[in-house]
Length: 157
Image (cartoon, rainbow, N blue to C red; front, side):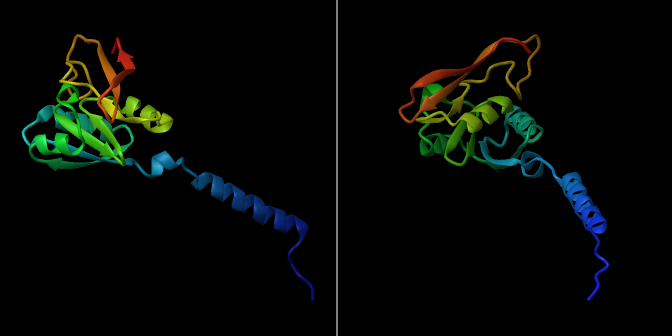
């Protein structure tokens, strides 16, 4: 039996297959945004702006509106660490206007014993607040007991 499949034709087919696979490849992050459940008060505009910031930076926010006290209780967020909205990614809590870049770094590094990140209160220049001129703010990490450590300092826009 004689085949029309020569070495040259086989190499051409393989090269074409590799080129097609390479052309269709995209990084996983570009294919699937990271889901984040966001709990917020229905009347809070700055929370809506933070959700837009997260969605524009590789996250897919699923927004749940309602009172925040039950959410803070459920996720054991101490009053000193609370803000106007709470994000949940898996077992991690993102409290307040934490920048998407800090959330990505946190998820990548997964610091041992750390429950989440917070910016207590509502810093004027954090994402979603966006006050000008820029006012420095600090992102804190926290453990299950509420002990905090500086995670990131934002000193300029």
